[in-house]
Image 1 (tube, rainbow, N blue to C red):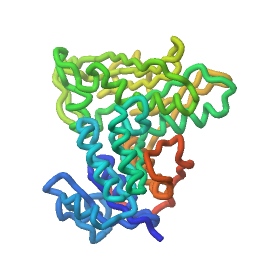
Image 2 (image 1 turned 60 degrees about the horizontal axis):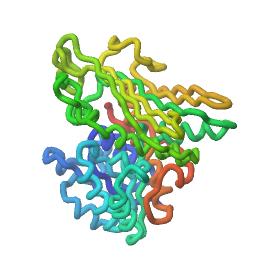
Image 3 (image 1 turned 180 degrees about the vertical axis):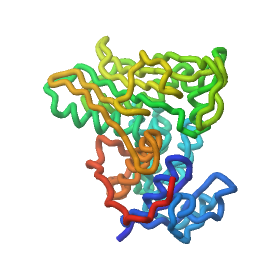
Image 4 (image 1 turned 45 degrees about the horizontal axis):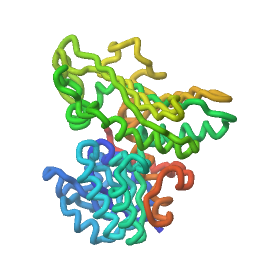
Length: 363
């Protein structure tokens, strides 16, 4: 019997997740929530860019979706700049007795030791009271920081350091809120990008550091972060908008987990808006972008993850991977014991069956 699923938000990640819910025979779509008036009333198939008419019309009425009592909700609303609201949404859905898989807030990938205990307890208590579960994951933070490094580390006799790196050209990424309001691309030198304000990086990726530490049974004494910016030498346009001369055009940052005075866990991001920027910074393994997991130990590993898609470029493929990660987790989350779950306690999440050919629209 198909798992009944309600879907929340149809942005970059949400649209892709919705497409899988429509085409994957494991699921039955019960409703779609949107935040935009322009999307209200549109068929879910249209919002997912398929040629399928689902008969499910989008709504802004969250209560109506919850009243249908689906088995699970897929929550893809942005959480980077609205953590409090996203936490409240998740608690509301759990409080309606509905399991949740979510792409945000990413701090919930592994909130222990990162998020204030009162927020964790509120979600945990709500989930257990209503006998449902919550799982939040993605790419980075997500499987590049938990599944991949821990899988390879399982072959090592010893591990001295793990470094997870994203290297990507974001020039084709059209997420305006993330690009400008969160990461601060285009900002002038006198304005500190929100992502780089004191403590924000350590909070945002602290969950990934803590997840690796828990999986390796390493005690992290401190999490620190650092960053470096590059400025535009001229005005130029990217998919999200215009980058003015003198504005932030590339950034590199690190989040480090320290144990006994040593950097044992490192997450690094190298983000360019044009491939010619900062050639001295680490370069991806494929044109556009890739991920790299480096393990120093015995044996040591360098693992390059090169994401591609028939429907878009490296940025699209990365978003699709994050969407697939949570949608494919639905059966495991529905079957799990009530409470908050991480990649460390759920069973291995495998891929979905291939949807019928000819059902996907152009992207």
